Amino acid sequence: MGISRRNFFYGTAASAAMVISASGARASTCAMPTKERQAALSPQGVVDELMAGNQRFVSGTMVNCDLNAQVMETATGQYPIAAVVGCIDSRVPPEMVFDQNIGDIFSARIAGNFVNTDILGSLEFACRVAGAKAIVVLGHTSCGAVKGAIDQVKLGNLTEMLARIEPAVQAAGPVAERSSKNTDFVQKVADANVALTVEAIKAQSEVLAGMVAAGELVIVGAMHDVATGQITLIS
Image 1: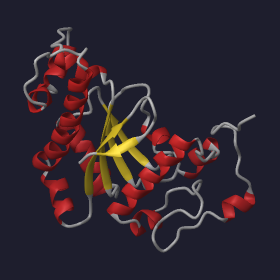
Image 2: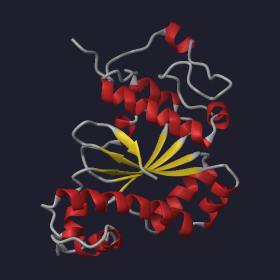
Image 3: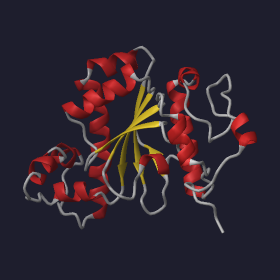
């Protein structure tokens, strides 16, 4: 019988092994985020760590940690290494698909993984104030928001929200069949939406653009395959 992430308890010996190497990488993947670890990691090192976590997720070798212990250990402060702008889709929880712990990731989730002033302000807090060194714009396959934008769905506040994705529909290029049934076009729009969101973050936030220019932050786009769990960097 497998041991669940919630119920597994790492003992005293494992806890003692939770130290941070000179590179900032974890000596144990149950090690809690610390100010020292956050400072030691480079922006690219953060991306590498996230992608290594996704490989654990895909291969079924996720590390089981005691979530209750993590809650207690992070109660007095937080030192996340990354911020993820993701979709609200129930199949793409960032901490799970990147196999990260409580306290590792700032997560901003909105249908269609785009940014607005509120999300940009949140990202500025996450990176400039709280020290995160990477922003990942995480799209996913078979995105309902993308499909809704393609089909020009009209429904209450959803109408205005889906209009935010229209630039990606246009950027995906002319198509004979503008329909959510056109799976190739849906994916092209999803890819374009991620790329445009990455560019929007840089263009609309002087704070974050300045951090990128100074080498303090990296902003990347990625695509999660809901059928396999695999995440691929796309920008």
